[in-house]
Length: 112
Image (cartoon, rainbow, N blue to C red; front, side, top):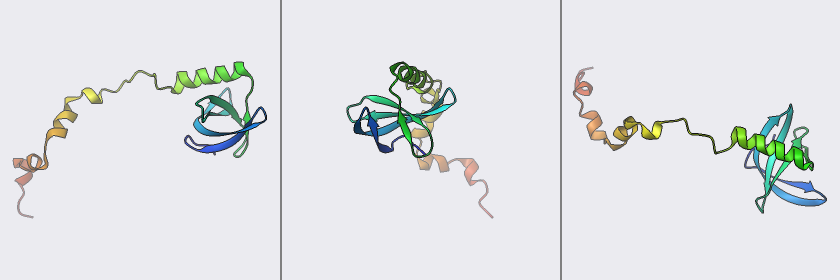
């Protein structure tokens, strides 16, 4: 199994290069690994099984897979969360523990 952050040594056009796995994805019913070399260049490998990665040297196919990955999983997605703008979090972050327990409701049941 290939996980982002893992390292492996792969053979690319006769050279052995160490890669870091950036992403794994399924595209067109095949599993692919996107890896980055130490110089920051991205490569695409076909994940045939649990232990074997096959370098994809078809530039058009590599470009298509990388575009799909960036489109579907890239960081340029619009952030739809509004948690940073929510006043609730600002209010909760500024309260200290004494304010939390000074509430009258907290002290209503003193006898157990």
